[in-house]
Image (cartoon, one colour):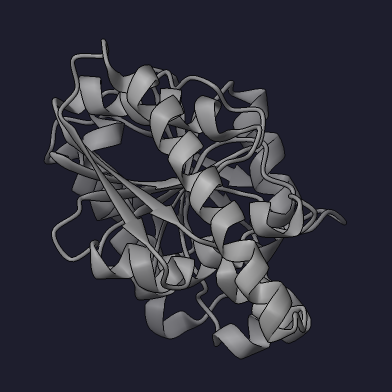
Length: 270
């Protein structure tokens, strides 16, 4: 991974997320592209008048200037190659515009444009639309130990396979890799057993352990999180949105549940 795309936003978690991005950039000897987006689309959606919208423009510009100054200070002595990009497009569009040659996107789990009250729809959209994995960080995440154990959420689907392949650079560095399979009815058309994923990793010299999680009254997202925390994992790898996105929004789903209460960094790939 040589090109990392980082979503910058002027909130309390910005510096923590940036530290994680720097940890990964140093580990992979990667270049960091910092994308700062003016959050105008939310305020339009909130029904601001033209006059109120115009009045916000200098405030946004000042926030962007302060964020850039803060970020430049943070990056000055880090020894990491980086560049800064500003955009007035919606966040998803701005990041996607610069993602075709990115190897990884880093974003927070909560939507700062809503005061951090809801899961990031941008993270979910990017997981569907970007042609690279998306690393979603919990609010409190301030560092990233790439040698920590990793848990791969496995259901035998194409999405799980794509996520696994994208995670190889991370899993090569992990001290332990666990394949976690939750017992439930799966689509037999795509029912690749966990051993298939383990065999795939073995070709990269990565040893793994298969863990079957027994049926429980807990939802799948909670079971996966509990399994990761019990094994002190620093990363969960998961295929994103195995069902239709509309159905996920209406009925829920594992991806959305994970983003709602994220406790371990989550690497997503559709």
